[in-house]
Length: 189
Image 1 (cartoon, helix red, strand yellow):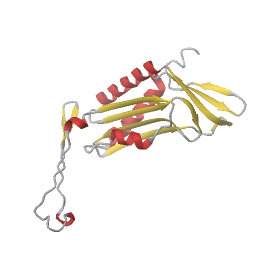
Image 2: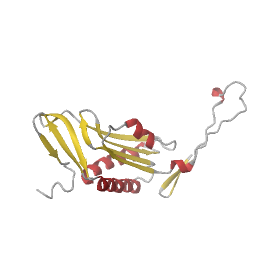
Image 3: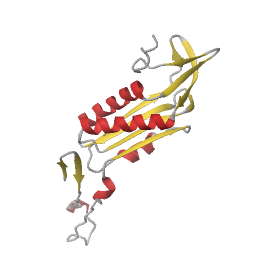
Image 4: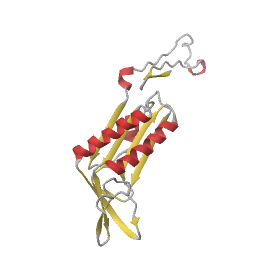
């Protein structure tokens, strides 16, 4: 059973195999699976790298037996922008500051949605070909509403506050893009 305690969740799980699924001769045997609670403390996983992102890897990081929901956002490179053919994207970041800002986002999520168990935010740097993921955000929680709202908050806040810059490479030119949500975008205008 899962029970909430102030600002974090505690979980212990006991599972008994139903009689219909027990092997012959094991009628009196009860199988208990106990999860080590310390292994399932809420965690934040933040990663900036130049390698291809994996949704499977991120799912493994956030999945929890106490949670009935895992919500994902996957931002991919599209092949067009404003009528121009996009060849690929290139991302740059000031990693120490970007990681610090993402940690702030995770803290905010935990204050707004205390039931959230695990949070993973991975952003690719360098060259990202068309159809590949640039960013993946994953959140687990006992119920879907918290994880869905938290994922949306994470990606929107990341785009508005985290110093990661995107360059779109077209067939014959390129363009540095700013996010409309970015708080410093209006300062220079």
